[in-house]
Length: 244
Image 1 (cartoon, rainbow, N blue to C red):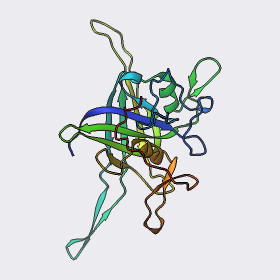
Image 2 (image 1 turned 30 degrees about the horizontal axis):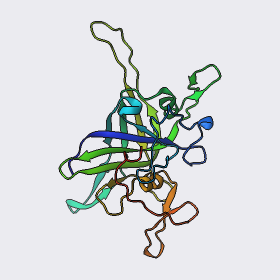
Image 3 (image 1 turned 90 degrees about the vertical axis):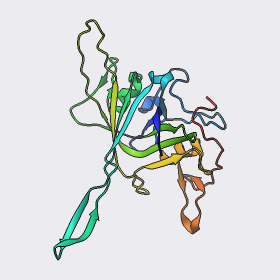
């Protein structure tokens, strides 16, 4: 399916317990008003723990460059011919770009720790942030939203090259890379969602990918449930902007 441009990127961090972090005092996001907040397009309820990188919060997302989707392939020969083809695992990484992500969000994703001096420090021992993301694009031919979702990975900060202003200013934008890995509980590596699918629901997608709901696969049941097994009623939202 053809897609054009990038609408927004939703990101989130996990705490040490592997649960999405919603507490600003313990490494979760803080917000400037509603900028960056994510809402259920059906009910208007805030979906906590997420940050939407878009025009309002970050002067626009600029890229979500996804590589490593093709698995490695090796050939086993016998009798002078290819006898078997072994297919390895994909190793996706997603290079994110935005014009101006708030530093309190960017530094959390970069694995920095806030100190009492108003700084965000990187200690000698690595402390990367685990989290996930959903990149949102659009097919204009059929009016379909595409959501490319990665439930788990490690965020790595981009390089910074500062230089002197001359006739034109030297502007440094924000870059981050998520190195994706399979989610332990179900081995989900990535998933693509389409807004024209009958079962699609924006809020349930976010909750499922971030581990706030699960899917009961027993006895052929595909009904979404929360972490305690209680049924979750799907809404009918197919847009990430309604209700904001």
